[in-house]
Length: 452
Image (cartoon, rainbow, N blue to C red; front, side, top):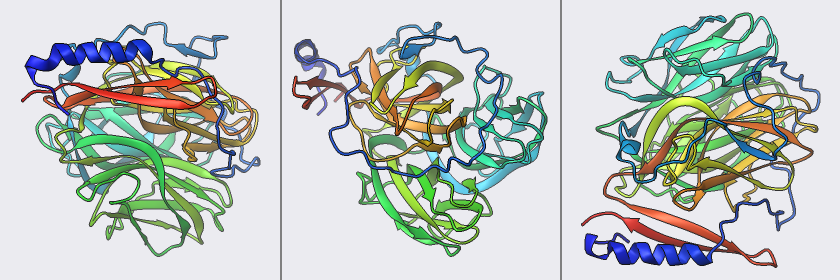
């Protein structure tokens, strides 16, 4: 509920009183429900030798660390909303393909695949095919070359990952760490400052889990998992297992069968990946190129015309945190640091898992929740990444996600490409949690701000 300017001091006092008696749950807690495998990982999958991908990341013995350059966020800084954008979904379209080497390749995006000249950022699926050496691909704003990795790969293997990238003069850039590879860029949407939809993150929820084949299967999404009937697009993790043949999965708006691939896979090897896909009559569709597979569709948020939603602020991709993950959920601070304001509602981060001791999956969810979903599957020793657009919860100076692996341990890196904040004029929610000695979690949410 929005507050009038005359009542704001009282509201802020109420928030202060609320936060003074509630304790933010920033430490790891064990899951209270029996752990079930969300996806299986095939230990025979070869490990990606992404040597050099982390040479510039400082080593630490701490369980979770923030980049040394991180600085406190400024929740009320007007510059936080400068360049904030709204999303427009487009039918998934191949915008570029070509050979990429170790020298950054500039890739024009604006003016192609329905992306207008005024776009501030683009959502693009990046597929690497036929790499001549093991390594990683880096996709960043044009002219920017931060020490991050969009996806790791083994020699000769196809692999994909979704990326949200700030546009500089209408372009992005890509490079690989070693050798060369054929790269495909498939656009599914863009952000502009003037028109489009706002984003609303939701607690991760599974809305579909059935086998799919080579004929498109319609997947109703609106009305499920917190997605309303008027949603225009959805953000979801697509997981596959028990594939009868090697191939790729294609997820597109219902009734649209573009010649693109959301993710490639070997036979009988569990994989996952994030998609941002437009809804048509409240639904998407999915198919595999060969055989059949078990497919899971786990919603993380949606876009709509809601005035209370959030707008996107793109930034130059930067490593914000790294964390040693175990099977017990641990919190990772992604808002209130590195210029990301504490009032962010969700953060767009590429999550890279390195050196897992056992095959399994990584789970990234809003802090304090442990939905039975998987962000990405991996083999023992494999380096692999997946984009995450996850709700962050906490105070107005410190908001977090939580992360875990299903088995063993692994190192995780969080590379942020942008964040969402409430649209100007909408209320800002402050959520705090209190954990009792018995492990029970109580949530309290108060909204401040807004205008008449």
